Image 1 (cartoon, rainbow, N blue to C red):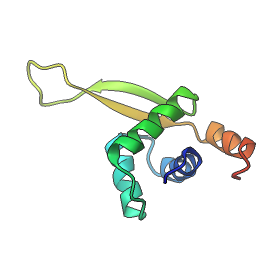
Image 2 (image 1 turned 60 degrees about the horizontal axis):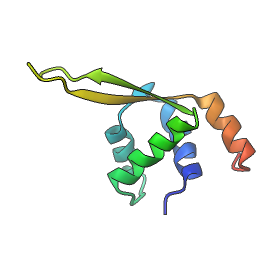
Image 3 (image 1 turned 90 degrees about the horizontal axis):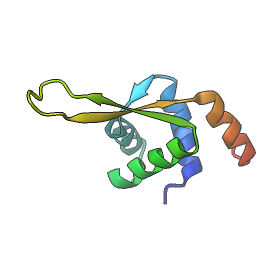
Length: 92
């Protein structure tokens, strides 16, 4: 089971090498590290972190979709807030 604190810790590591990322990018990162969570679970955890203010979400249009308004969600982590939150939770 993937806990919200686990996702925050991994996101802290991941955000050091990538400024903005999609849920798909982070999902692949987790899978490569051996975590067996579904994409929906990862996306839900990112949404919850956004509700807590630790991650910012923004929607950007996808290129190559003429006549369609297709948006992709890009996430931006706030490492300082994530570290403070993890300290409060006793994880750092």
